[in-house]
Length: 336
Image (tube, rainbow, N blue to C red; front, side, top):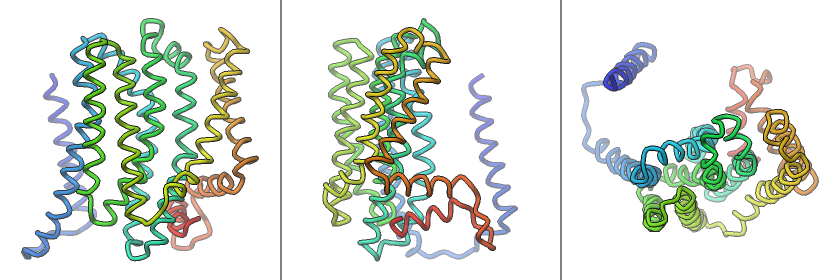
């Protein structure tokens, strides 16, 4: 039963640990220093607290939706997973790159702030069009992937897709506190998210609607992201308009893309709900997004495409075999 999954995960983790020890040829030494332990605990307690609170903030909606019945939970799961599968890929990649880069810049505050703004611009140019695009084609995607039995997942999917797009900003905020050695100070962000989402969930339970639940999640993410950006701006001695400039290329061009996609769907009519229609609408939206970027924010988009190509295609220019991802990290660190 379920225990087979649990046992498999535990054995898999143990095997990975054993393989890591074997391949790294590293063994812990029989030495002990309280100073090292205290220093490690002071940092990791903050990470642990932030992780636990963050877990609660991300899952409070599931606990509430479960009270609406099994059917509602299944529909909500589909609405939540569709945008978050895409977002998590971006978030994991962004966090893995940002933390080691920022950790090397803690003594160079101007460069630290520039790297934060550049990474925010990069991750939003990549993520916003996917999330906002999913929001406007949710009717086609849900219908084609899951069938007419799950049409009531369309509106929650649209709302949660926008919420996931906004939450991409956590990807560049959280590494700032980690790299600066103060992860506990970021815990106020998920706390606010819990409070706002929880208040919205109380209303959603009264209404008994998954759409209301989705709006509660959206409100919690918006509140948390706003507070997080304010805290980061103060910590890095930036201004909110600096963040606004970093967000402008992705935000403006995503809105243009949404307008073009809605127009294309209106022209196609019922044909937009078929696979060929969906492919056509997505292609038109992507073209509109890139066209807007190259016309209105040419430098930002050219830099994005250059760094994206560097990250995807392994570089042959380096004799030491470093990959394009390493070059991308160096580029972001230099404010590229």
